[in-house]
Amino acid sequence: MTDTQRHLFANKMSEMPEMGRFSQGTESYQQFAIRIADMLLEPEKFRELYPCLEKAGFQPA
Image 1 (cartoon, helix red, strand yellow):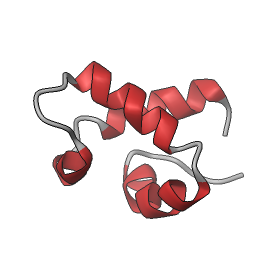
Image 2: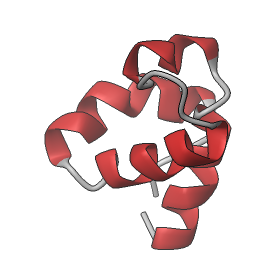
Image 3: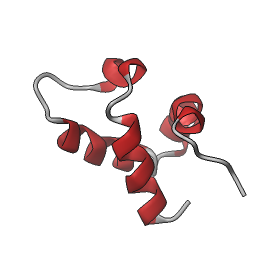
Image 4: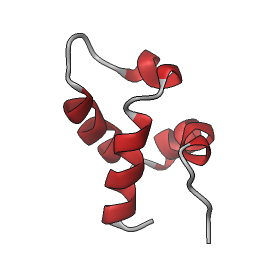
């Protein structure tokens, strides 16, 4: 996944209700998307977030 794709999908995922459990306090969607993009760099978090990533339209090559 490229950096551009990572940020695109993080933006989509930040607005998904099921991602709410990962949000922190009163952060904005934009702040949350940045954190999600960082989480997608961690293999363990990537696996945990994969179902939401697919729901956002991600299709592995």
